[in-house]
Length: 259
Image (cartoon, rainbow, N blue to C red; front, side, top):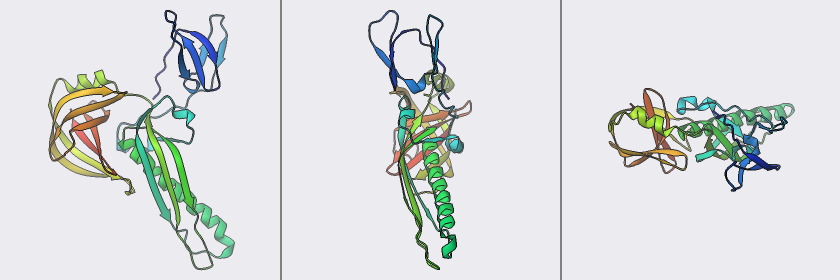
């Protein structure tokens, strides 16, 4: 979700992509991406409106993957925090077809394959704690159809996962209540080759050493039984549990930890 914020300042200029300004008691020139600004209200009463930013949905964990948004615009993600890279590949057949039905079969097949590719990208993004995917590359090979022969159609997508709102570190620390030992109840995993994530019961204990906030991201340092990693990124939390993430080669793991 986007957080609405008012900035009291002196506007220097409005360019195609950015707005430059200075704070009343400072001389340093600041800039902000124009696509994150809804409007400027001048002292004269004049109001300069800009396009309203998209309303992004909240993603707490993998089950919220359908809330992930997809964009092909680099401008849209400039002010958001990267949380990882995503990639997916899907393939399929439209089946055999006579010559008259070739075009429709190909288009229907590619549409279904694109949907599966985006579905996998969204799942990977949600597991990384993101709610927005910037698709940087999308390649496809259309199916080749003869009267009774067909070749598989394929699509491969790559992108960057972003979060549009940072986790509140103080709120997370308050929910920990100074505890250092927590119960892990579930492990969720997904590799770049998987069609979807899988869930497993995982009875373990997480021993927390400390929590740090770095570059807008939240990390928990500690030991989780039977897991080699010692640094985990906190990708989401509720009143009842929090989610720790780590990545081993091409597989992303989420651990559900009860408060």
